Amino acid sequence: MDNNQLEAYLKEKRLKINQKLEQILPIEEEPKIVHQAMRYSVFAGGKRIRPILAIIAYEISGGKGDAILMPACGLELIHTYSLIHDDLPCMDDDDYRRGRPTNHKIYGEAIAVLTGDALTALAFECFLGSSEAHDFSERAILRFVRRLTRAIGTKGLVGGQVMDIIQLSKDRKKESLEKTCQYKTGALIEASLECGALLAGADPRLLSALKHYGKGIGLAFQITDDILNVTGDKEVMGKSVHSDREHEKITFPELMGVEKSKKEALRCIEDAKVSLNDMGHRAWPLREIANYIVERKS
Ligand code: GRG
Image 1 (cartoon, rainbow, N blue to C red):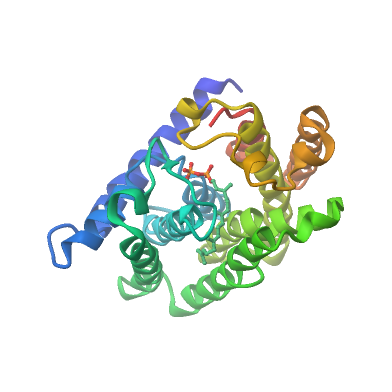
Image 2 (cartoon, helix red, strand yellow):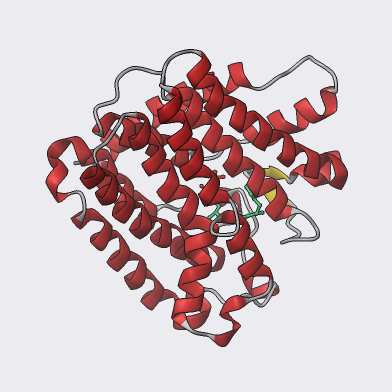
């Protein structure tokens, strides 16, 4: 499998996701400022990994057509919300994200907070709207929302962010750091896969294999993010580098060095790929995305 094939595949998925996001995000209505701020961050770029994973899991589970696009876009809105809040002065205080000044640098803190809040509300409209359009049964949507909600609360994004802020891993234990990463980053990645599969009515065995895969790539994703914060290029990444050291954060490279961290990320993706064994060729994008996650430069 060559890199060009994956690139073409990701490009095609991103195009569809961006077209759908274009339809979903309000533009002209008042209060215009918040609608502009939402669009500013959503369309600043972004790899769209979470909606892509949801779409792939849906297709692997037998789902057909474009009905998955709307709920998948909701996942991207939740992710963008978390980035905007993560960058706020009261959190990581970052000036640069997705190759642009951060949301609060342009719109001010109050609008940035509200932009995040508005993106969550819109995300839930996307999830529930899929039912109104009769694309999915209400039961399937309920399962989706239940699974997703777990991933963004104190056992997911919010919990991980709290662990990050209180420096749960200051005990310098690998388990504490893994837990923080699992919650802060892994939870939404894992949930995106499971949510996509749930909408297609995947059986429990497939769901559990996708969950295991998501857990592995989720951790590898954050380890690579930490490595890129040390070795990456600000222009290529579109976000600040060396910020973890400035904030004296305990990260994988800080704990065990860059080389050992790379090995750890590789171990995670190899473990993740094992869970795809029973899925055969249809899982090729997931195999390639696992490799991409540790090889990426942004
Ligand atoms: C309840 C949604 C919500 C958030 C509140 C602020 C917060 C709690 C959580 C922050 C979680 C966070 C920002 C984790 C980092 C995850 C991560 C590695 C982000 C970078 O993801 P990429 O590389 O970014 O996919 P792009 O820009 O490509 O989309």
